[in-house]
Image 1 (spheres, rainbow, N blue to C red):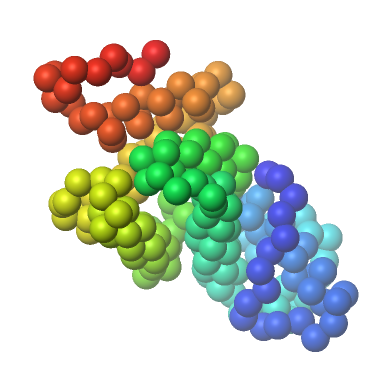
Image 2: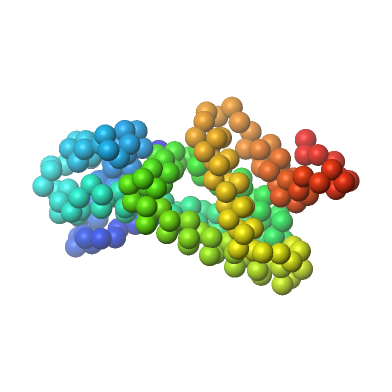
Length: 210
């Protein structure tokens, strides 16, 4: 997993040294949960990887579930921030859709451990899992509503559209982002975007994505 800067929620460290220690624990937890899965991972595995004592873990977290939940919240925020920065400045909604797919797939590939944690959270912390997608959906729906008012996309049920578009990216991420590097992200994004833009109608009269 790439080096990342973790948000520090829950028991806030009082010093810079404490913040660094908590970040080490979160990074170790992300790797352990990503590799072993929640149930097989023990707190001792996390502290061993972080090279700290068991007592140090409880200074920052009350339980294994708490650190897991914090990672889900962190992943949710990191994903949205990454995509927002990628599409920032793109004024056309359809162009933003393609750029967003590329950003999501690259993100899933670069942060496989965190991505797996969110997928597993539906069985470990269902409320955190639902909240992750609920927040994502709310922002997505709003963006589609703005695009509709601007005439960039046609009128329709943007709440349903948002869930459908999120589903496309999520399942492409599961099928491709977590696989090896043999997949060309741009080719996949082009194919998905072609379907988003033109649908499956054989009378659309357009050239298929190459």
